Image (cartoon, rainbow, N blue to C red; front, side, top):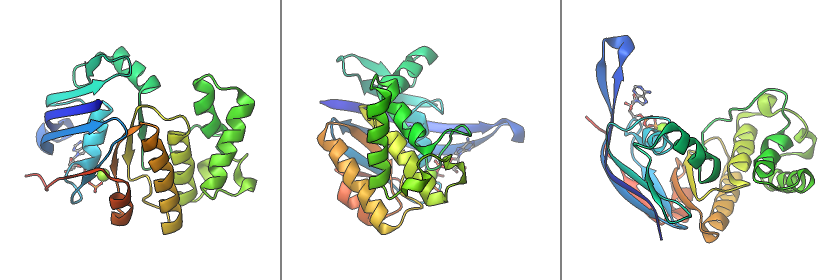
Length: 229
Ligand SMILES: Nc1ncnc2c1ncn2[C@@H]1O[C@H](COP(=O)(O)OP(=O)(O)OP(=O)(O)O)[C@@H](O)[C@H]1O
Ligand SMILES: [Mg+2]
């Protein structure tokens, strides 16, 4: 089953603070992701990889082209023109985005940041906390940190909490922007193992990796981007 079709997608930014200068984000992107497939975006810095993910998540609007998402109920929706409320619903139930950096509220513990994703989905608080602790432990977060706010964690620890938050209650499409950028090889490969399990469960993913070995292990398809302009 096809999950996502991107057709002739273009994005240019108009920088209003600079008298409306146009900056090209990316040009003429065409791709298709099936259920349970991992597609990697690969290319030089500035090629538009992050901008593509943000456009798929509708953090950025589309300049032209189509982003056809196939929902679990069989209906399709064009993310490039969907209403704000449709986008909010998609983000709630079907499309997840794991940014490179953790963005959370202060004073919420690491376990709660992760477990609340399961609670939102209807799981009980107790079960959610047990599962969150298991995943944090798997990602080598020390137990003494579980009840602290991740805001004081190291860069790599924050990133692992962020991944745990992003994958514990997986949606049908996950967008991953350099999820392992500050991790060592061991933790990078542990994350890759978890992503493989998600693939087996039918989760589709579009991701960016700076670690080429990780990219090759996980990817079903690699979409190469050239520098624009
Ligand atoms: N909000 C924005 N406003 C203006 N220009 C932007 C904006 N976001 C991205 N760009 C421009 O779009 C181009 C692509 O940027 P993007 O962040 O997508 O690249 P990338 O491939 O993810 O690079 P990297 O590998 O360094 O993360 C860059 O030239 C950048 O300056
Ligand atoms: Mg980027």
